[in-house]
Length: 288
Image 1 (cartoon, one colour):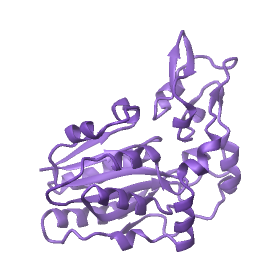
Image 2 (cartoon, rainbow, N blue to C red; image 1 turned 30 degrees about the vertical axis):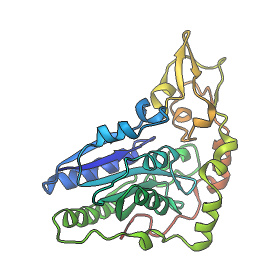
Image 3 (tube, rainbow, N blue to C red; image 1 turned 180 degrees about the vertical axis):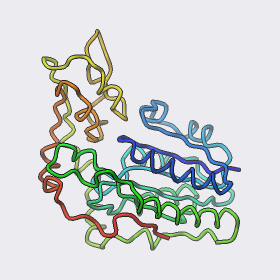
Image 4 (cartoon, rainbow, N blue to C red; image 1 turned 90 degrees about the vertical axis):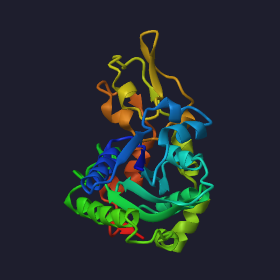
């Protein structure tokens, strides 16, 4: 039996964190496998992925779901995948929820992931939030959480790994962490129940390419985690509905010619006070 990691990582911080956590488990003798859905069209573009998930995940004794936080929510692609997991009918398998975020707020992400994973027959035994460098703030006066995750985050992951191993070995009961995952203040929890990620971000999903500036380097194609771009007739073009854009700004920051038009950059600059926004405390923690 193995522990399966399910990961979506637009900027690489979630993947790095998941790999560190997986290494800690493997060093304790736990067999692990990782499914990275980033840029994977079998997950990103297919509507029905339940059979794919069933085949890829296989037999497992624990599931670790790893995603970034956008606008206070678990990133929409991973949340969709959680709700399409094959439903457990016999026995409830423990699950760990891991999020990385820019440190401003983690809000309801772990709570909604717990609700989703619970509906599929898993027991969400623990939530982990890890502060990570906020890629969107790369052009701000202050880059939020520069060079994170760091030593503190490693300590949090080590604490979580110890708990996970104790559950796997039967030394600790697999107890639903429902109440612990509801740590956000009630007014904020209520607000984010009303305001979905799409309601907050939807009107800004108008990323485009200035064809007069684009030099065809293809960096945006390689950087985009949801495969919005492709080279068509020797020109880089948007090939998916703009609504599928997640506003991660990886294309914007990787474009060597400055040809990406990204309306959300300036909105985010104002919302995050040019990088000087007040950060959640503690930034990284385990909830169980």
